[in-house]
Picture 1: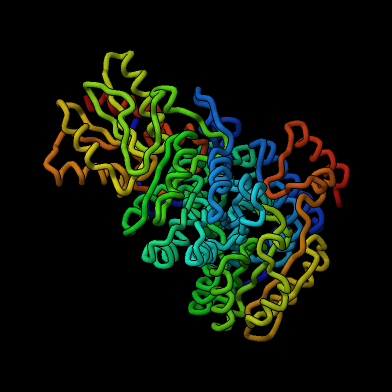
Picture 2: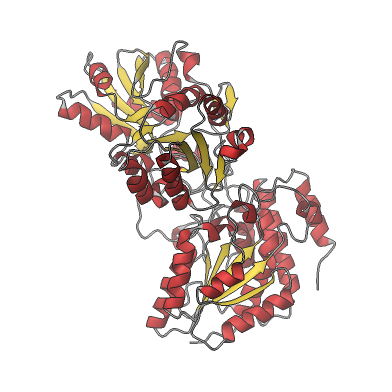
Length: 348
Length: 284
């Protein structure tokens, strides 16, 4: 199912019909979780991984803008209170101060929600951190459509905003393993990083399908092969792709899944090699607007290198999204497993 | 054009009773969702009562009436409180309360202008309301419209640089039609606001930015009425701020005592218990 709601620049409350009491469907939740999808979970993988990293590296410090509990950074704050800086609800000074700490030799991990980093603190990230190539790691919860709270908290265009920024490495992990292995990798990386953060109880997905999987910064990994369709995905859409592939197999469709957790720099060699194999439909899948994210990055890679399979994109529409329950919204906007299967079947 | 009275204002119902009605509706909405920012709603109910039933001019059946005073909810997550006030004011039908936060409801958990009659702006990305208020106050003056702009913000928003840009701008432009209400409940997501990024001495800060400042007990209706009257009637080309010290979960003692109150956890059986506590203390 693709999104049926069109962008309406004049949308107004007059046009909204209230649901009848008791018929409003599912409730929305600010604290939403993808945990209950049939996988084991790990609690606060980012916080625990950062504690382990900080034990080995005394340059690691933590910053937050009033969201330590909501970005799992409170785990680090409890373990290393003297290395934790609570900046209050002030994202711009948090970023500037993280840049200042980096200039003094530290490796700051700065956390907030993805909307506030990408929209509010952007200029500060661009000039104080990215232009200077400072080792600040910006780690943000609620990326893409991971809250039903409405546009103020839905960072549907964070990747598009940050992809335009030179020097910045961008990571979109799928699951708890990705997060835990990305933390040492981005600490070791000498430059600035933006990482999207699954928080709280985070499912452990990939190794259930692919026991040998390891996260490597800058590398895309083929998680399963298939002859009919190649899905190139990042973030939790890799989980959707794996689940969809299992279901599609039962329906006689063979789907490969290429997990691409590093959005920038993109692993173009692997993408070109996989997309050039056979005569498969190539589909990108991202928890992000179709504008300026993984899909367009892959499309540009393919076209400029003369690799031209049949190509389709799964992602969020170019509009401000509704408030509501996450499962409702994932169905409505085409990024649930069921919606993914329907789209792929329609394209084959 | 008038800044006088609404049908609601002329009612005999006491402001204390209006505040109680607002609290009760907020708790009922919290029960619909099983969650919600009910702690903030209970804390701000007295301010909203005085705003909607003493200070503001509006027409319940015409939410976009040009002569209305504009009430901006910068703190989008306080929507549960404002919906209660809008229902009590007759701007929203009471039965919609049952749809709070459900799919396709006009009452989403975070307030948005495109969803709800009477919701002037989309708040929730904190620190934006006061700047929008500056523009609306400039616009009203340009139109020679005597209406006031009220911006309700939280103490947490005092951390945002944009708040202080707007504060300086409002004084620079001599916006005597702008009233900022700061809900000082000393709670934000990670803990006490004064422990996160201390904004004290807060009254001195606003005064030094060129504002007329009052600081009152935000759960004392008589004090609020007096403060709103001063803010409206003051002679002097300054914007006005009313810092309201409030208590989260006010009116429901067993919730007031709960330690973490930014997103207060209420067990399924406690909503009815909270209503019972309120019902036992209904003002006339």
